[in-house]
Length: 150
Image 1 (cartoon, rainbow, N blue to C red):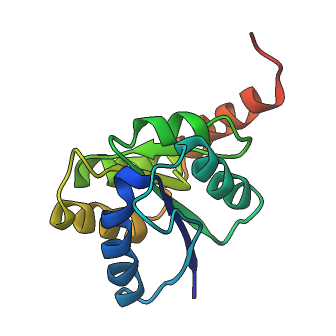
Image 2: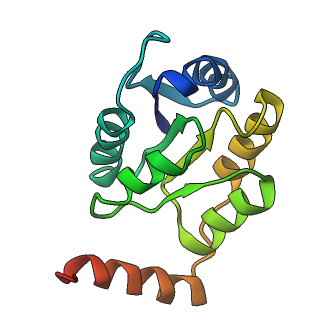
């Protein structure tokens, strides 16, 4: 069974609770990295926690939820080996996995409703990386991570 590491800030807390049950229903093990209440927290703390563990795991994937999904993606993408993608629809979720080998999905609880979030999560989880020409492009991303760019 594959493991999904999930986290949210206070803006994504309610959607995260909903998605944990949904993802478990799809047959995945879910590990919750917080937050655990609707009290205000700083999204970088949650995003980096999820991203660091995903960066060293080839088997796990991550989901981070904040208000728009953008802030957590920015933070997560600072971690080597992470390709975090904010998605607001199923097409983007499919493309993020098939073309970019996305290993963290970020969602915006103030942008999408729970039903849409479920569809996005399901599409993202079931879509495999396409390899082929996409592998060459993802490898270029990996090479950039090795360089110290300004």
